[in-house]
Length: 361
Length: 273
Ligand code: SF4
Ligand code: SF4
Image (tube, rainbow over all chains, first blue to last red; front, side):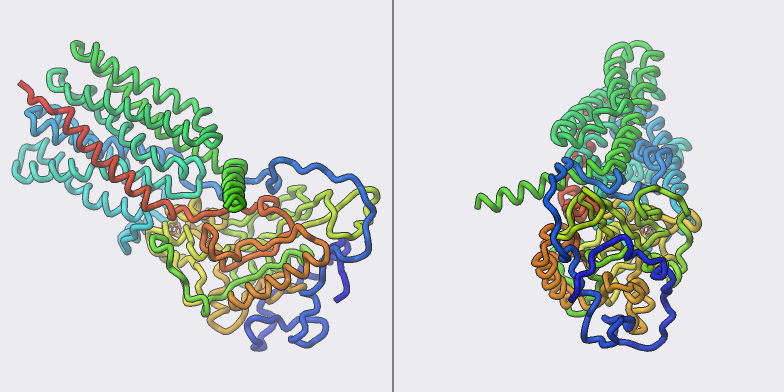
């Protein structure tokens, strides 16, 4: 058991040429047959104890840096999701889901034009969603492999099945709404899409939170509400944009309610996450999104009541605001994944807390 | 699946790696052997200037990665012989951890990732559709999506070799036995003994990483003896499988969805007229 330190001279390039698969002899699985002493029982190299040779002179210690990382590299691998596809999908999915619900509410309360506009809007947003989702795959042709399994541990799997339930109903609702054919079927599809729509709009929160990306994962308590609010604001915006003012009252209220919920959820999330909220707080997109959504909602319930033009402008602001929010959340997450600080420091803190609690007990 | 966090793999049949970084000499034979055996494409030849590390990280095209850290710290009570400076050179061969609670496997929507009869986690490249969900799910930054063919790839713990009674290529080639392959329970015992030995020899900063079945990922199938904090090697200090919080996430989503439905209904409360 002689001491062989880790001296730079130990780095022999000869080691590089040892390839696998060169030895064909069958050996017991847990041992290598390449060793100096030739007896499998004695593990010579393995027992080398680094740092045990000689005595070192005393010298001053280098103070420990307060944050360690491997050359500043992120701990996590960067998500491969592309912003236009996945952040775009977060927005479009929310718009589709909430619009379907708004459509049913409008239809059942005698607002046919708002209902029709929302149904068509939902179908278009759904089409965009599916395009974005499939476009983001590494192998788009294998999209249907998603339907091989149902896994409650995978929000993407659950989401695929939610979309499978929602899609045809949203399609039928829009088709019957526009053509006026099969009113019975249309009513059933409208109600069906309205019930599944909120699931489409909110499961996407679990989709991004169920990752190791710090800003997404840790925000999982508020994210579904933030997304629900943002979706309602977007659906309200679409209603304001496309329906006559006389029928747009539910859209105006949805926009106001959605904007309020979104902003409250975002504020709570930023407060709760502490230092982890930095990427969220820094995000200009998020601030712009909030400003647009709030301005749109307020304009909608004030000037938008009387002026069709003001209502349309408010609608555009709401839609743009909702999109900004989703892209902002997406980007803040990417930023938090790209900096090892956001991965390491909360984990360090957790360990320190656990240790302190153990010591106290 | 992680919803059943009390799930225990059949530990008696589980195999893994014990990577004892204290005897790693940084030869990168494991990186080469892995590439050769598994036909892993090249991952770019770039000069980073980070000691001897030019592979940078684990990814779809790097399944073993040797980290090199140069520190002005003493190694045990040894005289480094580089003038008036303390010096130690940490080297560690990193690999997929084959987690007990594997986030990549939990979130995979196609069932491409699966648990083998050896307790390891493997991608089926012919099933994967490249959704990329496993990539941000992995708390260790291991798995990646390959640009060339669009599917996810990572260490298979040489699934093909295990079936033939062979040990994985990296362990087979490692000239110092820094990478040891074997039955997990046996490896854990061996690691405990080794830790005591290294500590007794003066390297008190030595610690095991990933060996504890009580940690956030239920312990890993590939675990390590490290000479410094995990983050120094680019490893997370307290990794947690993201799906541990998923039941709570689903509850929050359900409440939000119902609230959205109710809220939208309320906006249309008064009939038009
Ligand atoms: S280390 Fe990452 S890729 Fe490997 S099994 Fe665990 S979660 Fe999956
Ligand atoms: S990229 Fe492939 S292996 Fe990874 S989660 Fe998606 S389908 Fe599964």
